[in-house]
Image (cartoon, rainbow, N blue to C red; front, side, top):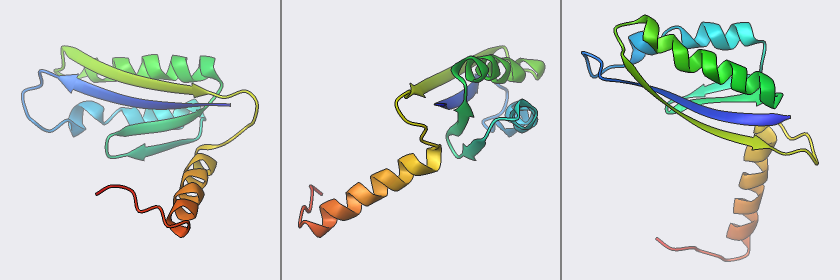
Length: 110
């Protein structure tokens, strides 16, 4: 299973807000049947790499249906094949490591 982090950024819109141009994305995500989490700066989606890249193309294309003439899409694809690790497990692993580092007296820099 792979995890895709995608940010779709309409450029050159008439207003500073982007919600109208991005409004079609949740429906595309729902129709994909893939697990996803929307966050303030993009979306994380789990699935087969081919399905993720197909979805990424659809998400990239969606803002062009509005008054948008340019779209910048940033992708990060994590395709780990030795274990199946859903997005929640990646976060849990980081939090465990952070807790262990704090317990060991590592203060880090501030």
